[in-house]
Length: 223
Image (cartoon, rainbow, N blue to C red; front, side):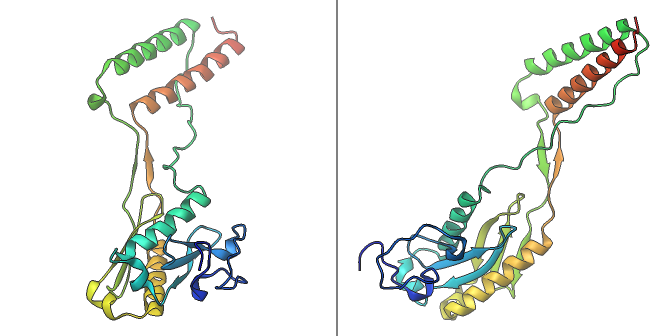
């Protein structure tokens, strides 16, 4: 068979003959597989694992590599396709509540103070700055201790571990069922992390709030 052949009927996309050399444009029904076609996964509308298939010949194809690598490779392909591989996105900056100000001079004093704080913050070495971060715990699911799936803070599968002794005797269908069971438990346990702004973000929020206050002061004709 040539390089493009779907050489495993189980892992060939629906409607494609396993002996065919035809390459079709990617379609969601095809799912995602690793380079050796040891595993294939399908994702739902939330980009969660929805279906898993493992080749009956996975031990032959894996060539001594860990099976978890095949799953992570397929999951990486899914993340790239759905553009889920990037970092967590901070929320939109919200102006801080500042004031009230009774005169334009008070606004100017507040603005001058913020600029001084900005200069002081910029002068510090990075290790002395409190940076923004996402705080939370990775979620983990287990299928009777035989397969463990771990989600990152972003809710993406970052680790798939197998009990080695069980894996040696497990059938390809049992492996697929256990991976799906563990991943579903991990998704149920997942809680989005909390965004904690750093000093730069807090200062930017105050500056934005002050700029809004300046507009309000001058609209009211305060001098």
